[in-house]
Image: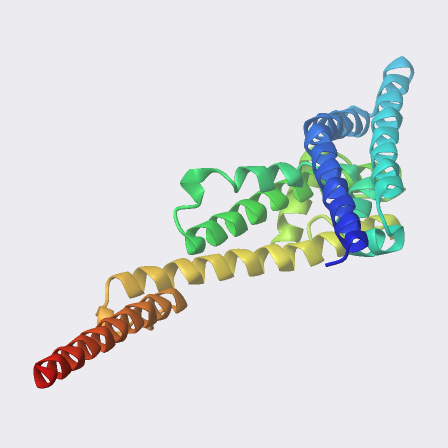
Length: 265
C-alpha cells in the first residue's frame, strides 16, 4: 500500500471516529428534545390550547424541530461524499421530517443490554420484540394525536376527543377496523394509510418472533439427533479432524523414522 493510500485510509478512520463521537454526544440531547417535542405537540392538540399556552407549545415545537434540522445539517456537512451519505441514511432524514419517531433510537439502546443477548437467536428475537412493541406504542400515540388534530375541526367528524382517537389508532394498527370511528378528511385518511402499513409490519414482526420462539422450544424438547448442525459446529468438527490427521501424520512419520533407524543399525 502506497503512502498516499495509507494517508487517505488514516483520514477516513479519523473521520469515522469523529462522526461516531458526535453521534454519541448528540444521542441523549436529541432524545430529550424529541420527548419535549412529543409532549408539547400532544399538549397543544389534546388540550386544544389557545392564547399564551398555545404560544408556548408552538415555541417548544419550533425550537426542538430546529435542533433536529441543525443536527442533520451538521452531519451532512461532515459527510464525504455527501450524496452517498444522504442515500445511505434515509432514516436520519425521516427522523427530521417526523421527530416523534426519534424515541425509536432508544429501543436500539435497550436491545444491547446483556440479559437480552444470551445468544444470537435470543438477541434477534428480543430486538424484534422490543422494536415491534415499542414502535407500535409510539405510532399509536403519534397517530392518535395527529388524527385528532386534523379531524376535530372538520364538520361532521366523529373523532373529536383523545379517547376515541386512541381507540381508533389501536383498532387500525391491528387491522381490526370496527368502523365505529373513521377519518373523513384527506389528511386524516393519509394518517390512516400510514398507520395501516405500519400495522402490517408490526404484525409480521410479532408473528415471526413468536414462530421462531416456538420452533426453538420444540427443538429443545426433541431428539437432538434430528437437529441440524450449525456452521459453528461444522467448523469445530473440521478443526478437530484436521488436528487429528496432523497428529496421525506425525506419528506415522515418527514410526517410519524409527523403523529406518533400526534397519540402519
